[in-house]
Amino acid sequence: MTERRGQDALLSADSVLHRAAERLAHQFAGMVGEETVERVVFESYAALARTAAVSTLLPSLAEKFARDRLLALAQSRGLIAKPVPEILYVCVQNSGRSQMAAALTRHLGGERVHVRSAGSQPAVGVMPEVVAVLAEIGVDVGDEFPKPLTDDVVRAADAVVTMGCGDACPLYAGKRYLDWDLDDPAELDLEGIREVCDEIRAQVEQLLSELLPQSGARRS
Image: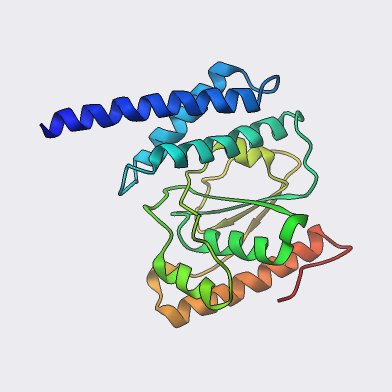
């Protein structure tokens, strides 16, 4: 009986993913071929499934992840304009440092910058302690989830910031690469995570002042 339920779940997910691929193929028509769209959707689902604790939300998360990857792919091919600078933050699990950096960049930069984050070995979810520390300063990451590092998002980025993930990021000419030496929140208590958050905020403010020299970072 358990095996039958598992097969039914897989069939149900397969149907949902095909419909997601149809929607995304329509959205990216003329930019990305239908076969590529379907491949990205199913690849995204498989990548997220490796670490997912609960499978019920996987198809919708896979569609969201695939949409962002396809957008990055179209941007890297010059088929969609990049109206603002693109920043990619990468750490090992995409559950702590890179999530904090991405959240603070969105908070401080607003619509003047577009942010992505990824992990070389993504975790199951964002660390609850990181969510709590960000909530203390009014930053919500409720919709975020760890994502694997993919070549398309690296190609689309203008600045790639790594945090303890070694040589996981491929190198491409014309991009700005930075490495921030930060303690891993997984090894810290709440006070230590707050200190890392303050360090990240200072680094983000500096980066935004360089990428957005006319207006700088928004203070709040």
